[in-house]
Amino acid sequence: MTDIRSEINAGVGLITLDRPRALNALSLDMVRDLYTLLFAWQDNPAVEAVAIRGSNKEGPFGAFCAGGDIRFFHSAGLANDAALEDFFTEEYRLNHLIFNYAKPYIAFMDGIVMGGGMGISQGASLRIVTERSKLAMPETNIGLFPDVGGGYFLSRCPGSIGEYLALTGQLLLGADALPMGLADNLVESASMPSLWDSLTANPETSVEERIKALKSNIQESTPIDHRPSWHDSGIDTCFSKSTIADIMVALENQNTDWAQTTIKTMRQRSPLMLHVVLEQIQRGRSMSLAEDLRMERNMVRHCFYTEHLGRQGVTSETIEGIRALAIDKDHSPQWNPATIEEVSTEMVLPFFTSPWDAQHHPLADLD
Image 1 (cartoon, rainbow, N blue to C red):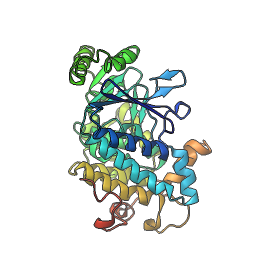
Image 2 (image 1 turned 90 degrees about the vertical axis):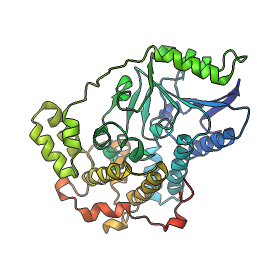
Image 3 (image 1 turned 120 degrees about the vertical axis):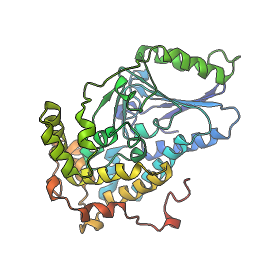
Image 4 (image 1 turned 180 degrees about the vertical axis):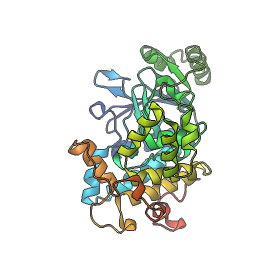
């Protein structure tokens, strides 16, 4: 397999993402290998549970997954490569499989966990983070939206936290993810190897008993009342508004350092995609995961093919955002429209129109 190591040991399927130079960013081959593996293990009686981790240049742990391979998105988008369409269809299918997995699926989320990394961990039955964990859905920074089910799991965060995280790309450090409902337990990174090994130690005991012991062990070290340093009472006040314009006005009215920082952050993001993302989270709140993934599959198609905006050629916010961040690295994306105020409803709503009829949607069979 490409950049993935796997084995079955004492009834547990063990997966290690092994592309450390790219912080385990998911390639199309990795997505395909993960899906093939997990699909086969679901019906394999020798596998009673699954655990997944990442690796860094020194070995296991230290990094989980930095997301999808955005350099591939850029080159495939420019080349009109059909593999780009395959990537998102197959990645979202993988996300759906994990969220609905028939066996315990345990994510050891040490280090960076962003974008696609959230997609292969948020559906886990047990999500373990450490003080080194850095979680985020930062897609508005590259002219994209929080996909891989982000409309589903972010919209289910408390209050209007989901809108805030989706629009700003705010970084969550370890314990920050707990009160947001994006992680279950916090442990010290130094304990990760022993916790991982405990799943396959004492094979004379059942897998169920080993998982129960793991949960009991890590529960003791998890803080009960943690408040992230970035959390502000203004989040619900501002981000519960129904439009980006109303959110910006509410932030101005806060007149706090947090509000000014948030305004500055949002002014750096793609204005068009801010409006699209707010609509996504609002819609996602009343959708099933399958419905949300179908919506996101429609959206991502429109992110790379911009005829709905009356544009032709390489005029994608996503292509431009990736260029500025990862290709030319000038960090000066030329967003179109350039300001939040220039975005109209007519630009936003076509993102939610499916290019396919229901029967022929690439994810039509998800339930």
